[in-house]
Length: 164
Image 1 (cartoon, one colour):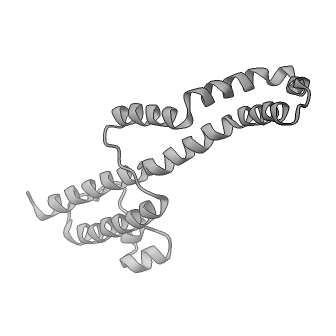
Image 2 (cartoon, rainbow, N blue to C red):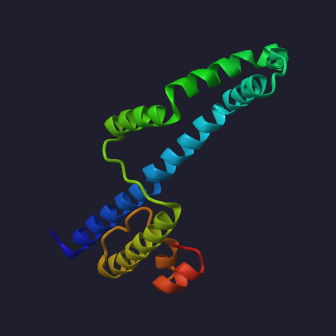
């Protein structure tokens, strides 16, 4: 394998890694927290209903106050009651189990990690493209080479100009 072929193979490998990082999913803990918050919010009508019932029992108010729920909201309250009955943590655990089975070991990164990793990978690829251009001689130029390389810009200058 020639030096040019090795460089191009490294560029292809970095390009694949860049795509993988770009498609990285958020960390599972962040997603679990979002699901937990969502399910807890769904249970809010049940909490309000329990408070109304507690008021009836505590203060002897009329049970008719429970009937204040508008009929159009009954399905939402019924769904909320189902979620509350199953329990938020139980539902989260079931979702995590299913997601783990389907996840396939997907790459997960925070936005900050993605940004940092992408910057490093793109800088590496750009440096290899500079080397590729210096090495290629009369070989045809690889499609997709960075414009900054064609202009003879250094890695830092191309990054400063937003070309990496």
